[in-house]
Structures are given as C-alpha cells and as structure tokens.
Length: 392
Image (cartoon, one colour):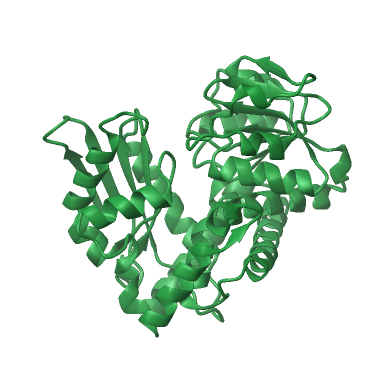
C-alpha cells in the first residue's frame, strides 16, 4: 500500500470537529474525489477512499478519449449533515482547503452532501467552483464549463441528470453480471440499503429493467414487499437525506428492523449508504448471490473473504459506482454533450465494458472481481504516468 502524496487533519476552532483531506496521487498536477460528511468519519476512511479514486480514474482510462484520468483524492468531515452546525462547519472547512481546491483537488458531492449544498458553501468560501483545479487542463474553458453547467440543468422525469448517471452505472454493472450468469432479469430480486442519490437511482433503473426491488433500508428501518416495492412512489416520498415518509407505503408493504435488508430473500444486495455496512459479524446473514457496492467501501475486507468462500460475488465499488465521477469528466472534457440520452448511452456502454472486463479477468486469474479490478488499475497507472508525467 503506497503512502499518499498528501494527508492532513483539520480541527475546526468553533466546534472542535475534525475534517480531513487525502490526495493519493496527481495526474497532470490534479486529483479528483468527492467530499463526504458523516458522523464518525476518520482519516483512515478518507485515505482508503482516495486510493479507490485513483483506481476509478485509471479504470476509465481510454487513450482515444478527451477525458484524461486525474489522480485520486478524497475529503471528509466528521459531522452529521443534519446537525444545525453542519453548514457553517462545511464553509469553514472549504475556506481552509481553498488553496488545495484552487490548485489540485477537484471535488464534488459525496455521502451526506448534495452538489447544490456544496456549490453554495464553496461560493461562500470564496471558490469559483469545486472543480476549478481542472480548468487549466481544458481546451476551451468557457465552452467546456458551460457544457457541464448545461448538463447539471438537464432533468429527466423530475430528477437531475447528475442524480441519475451514477445509479445507471450501478444498474448496468448488475445487469452485466446477470447476463454473464444467464440469469433472467424478471426472476431477480434486489435489496437496497439507502435511497439517496445513488441508491434511489439504482433502484429506479433496476426496476425499469424488470428486476423486483423487494427491500429498501433507510435511517428509519427497512421497507419490504416480496412482490416488489413501488420504487417511484418511495422516491417521490423521500426527504433531502433519502429518508422515506412511511405514509407512502402500500397495504402490502411491511416495516422491518434496519438490518433486515441484509437477510432479505434477494439475489442482489446493493449497499448504497455508509462505508463498512457489511462486516464479519453480519455477513453470515446474507443469502444473496451478488453484492453490488454502490457505496464506497461498504464491505469490510475480512467479510469479503468469508463471502467469497460461500460463493457470494462482490462487485467492487471502484467499478460499480465509478460512473458519476466519470460522467463529470466525460462532459467537461467534451466526450459527451449535455444530453440525457447521450449520457445514459455512454454510461451504459462504458460500465458494461468495464464490468465485463473485470469479471472476465477474475475468472481468468481465479481471483475476486475486486482483485481483478485492482490488477487492471495497477497495469494502467504506469501507462498514464508515462504518458502524462510522474507527478506521483
């Protein structure tokens, strides 16, 4: 495991809470990775996420594309985003990190933060944009920035395009795994933890593909129906944090304890909320065949070993949830237009190819999909460094 290029801890002088920034590596002098806010966030967690970002960037490297992968980074703040002090804390964090955001850390929404909130806080902190470090790499800064702004303004059925592309990518990874195994969509049941941006969009795309989402967990507990939940109804009843108003449940829907999603009778589990959701203690409750990591680092490594021994395949986060980050750069660098159909088509094509390549490599090497993805990234990182310079 390599030492990150930069690792720092900040303590807020108002609340005493801590924030973190880890830059794993730079490519062309820039790194990419979101900013999360959650109670209990740690420097080690942020470092692991930054390493993952380096791999996500490398996995999407296409020498023919305009989008050139960046280095990996991540930010984190130890605070509940619902806390009344959270927004002020976010602004102070960004003011402190302003030199890094201006120079070499392009960031965006992550767990606990929406892009709208992050943009508002960044403006208060004196930043031009949360991704302004990338601007010197653009061929036509004004045009490229306008294209990204136009993309963020696109809505599909009342949802922002930026809220949907990540879930589209997760769904496509799941569908690719089913296709390789010859499992029909209509016979496949899904349990989702978290109905925020990523979990909600994933549930939406999987339902529209013909799968049945039989369980959804949020902070209040698990909602379940063996015949399938009405996902559109639940999405319409969410608050800003992905918590569903239980008044939206139908007569046949049940309310169960929070961890009931783990043991749901489903072929696919989609942890789409917090890191470390699946550990040694609870992995034995899982009967699903696949776990698709829509969240970052939801399965602890020691739990994954036990799951693999039982024949449960973990589709890793560095592959599965990488589409949101890639969509930003595909759009900004000009590989795709500010158009929903083009964005979804490119996402589906790219994620199917990446997932298929990862699963094929795992079969060939006799390893897990995560080990295969790491191996592919490890082969690409030196190629990227050789082409664009060894900043790390």
